[in-house]
Image (cartoon, rainbow, N blue to C red; front, side, top):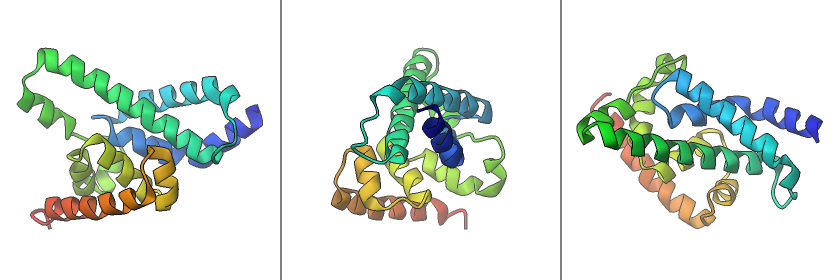
Length: 161
């Protein structure tokens, strides 16, 4: 079991970290979230039942951990900051990915949580069927949402280009 876990993590660590980065406002927060994903995956490893691929199972855990962490952060921030400050802070990105595609990450951060999950999985070259399995939506729904997401990203990036 340990060998399967370590092999799966090794194969998917870049994608998992990029997803964590899309749900946080800093590189350091993404590292913390990544560790939380690993901890949750290790704890749940005994319950893996081969109903889907181990990679799909791991991405599902990653999205759930990211969404939970995002909800906690938003709840905490809303107590102390006004809405404008929260919106501005949530769009900040730091770390190595900031240099590669900052405009795209800025636009991805502006999407709602499910759209962010879908586009991050899509950017990892996952087929719609697997994205559907991870998110609990249908493949057709993913296709429709991706069309809308691409349009939103295009409109977000157009003023920048």
